[in-house]
Image (cartoon, rainbow, N blue to C red; front, side, top):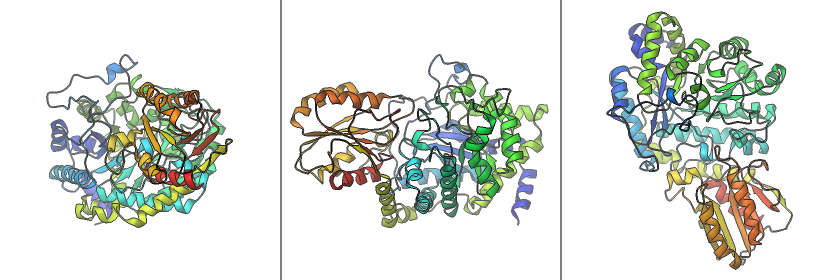
Length: 565
């Protein structure tokens, strides 16, 4: 039976309540599915699952206490809801264990809707933007590393392999590529998540990344439409406004969308929770703006694929609307999938609000069906109707532990390394020197913390090159303690090697900490994941290597670079 006939039949068979659930992508944080989620799946089914298995056991909302709109997201816990201390990380799952969990959820959902597959989603950009890093996963540099390198074939092959590896575990969609054109070097949200400050580079890189993902049957999603590159604020924590002339928005920031939508290579787009006055003079947030979603993306650019929101409880949106009202406005604007990462009673509230709006006549059944056609068509095209996404866990090692795949990741990491400067002529390092390594512990290392991805990986790699390497690590919360330890060790060292990372929400903490290490009077080699002095690199540091990432492959590659040049 053809795709169209299957979709027509399903639309005729499903109840309104189940149709609305098919438009929802709900969050499962950690590695435990709470009874409330099972209840929702049993009663209505579900369209998508946004997976966050490593960073917390329950979704940590972006709005701090007392923020505008906090009343729109805070609810008393239900009796069977997860009520967790989020200082405790979730139990670590291997790739096989997590794939078995996803299979279990899919099989449970099929009891309710036997033909309808769930699509599973993660963020997988690199570094802190990777929500799942199982042993063997290719750990490519950040997007900007590829953009500066300019090797499109390498990017395509890395994207294809990443897609194949994630599909083997049961992941169907990643919220990438980021096609924001990073024209503001002070941007605290996008920075190296962007391929470039040049829209032509962004478009070229996004094209081949989507092609590579498509060859692996992995759904890509371009974000953050119509562009977060010029911003000076982080939309996770509040409402940002991007005021650029309409012509400049079209020429630079909308160009990746207009070009790639016309080429028909874009399966999905995610709007930004930001305001664009020159695109919508009413100053409406893009996620719920009909002129931006339907007027430009649908009608001008001819995009008929899936439009998915970012997390609906992000700061700016909730400062203005309740979750239910924001969902209704997004549907009216032309959105198809509503992403709600909060694993609590808000999922019931959103569902009920949309059902009531259809029953009252505010939103038509035909409008709901229009979105379901797009969603199910995407799932059909990416073969989710073939086996409902259920994976054979016995085959996972063949894909995750493929040595050819691993070598490609290392190749990419080596190629993107660049020497920003070496005014003190410190490189290459001599193995007989006493080195003090001051190492930034990343969120990925903390979250995974297994023998393959953990704090002190770089120390292990460096000790293979030189015998006298001492080690002190630091996080944004342990900098004072780290400085005390550095003070006790620095006098015995010939040189300090320092790693630095920029994490959104932390401002310039690493930059200030790194600059302060000059007081110990030792020459410093900085290994920076970010090329921007504005965000991370103190101008007074004489030797700087930019790696575009502090994942395993990048750390191995930069170790070789330190000692071999």
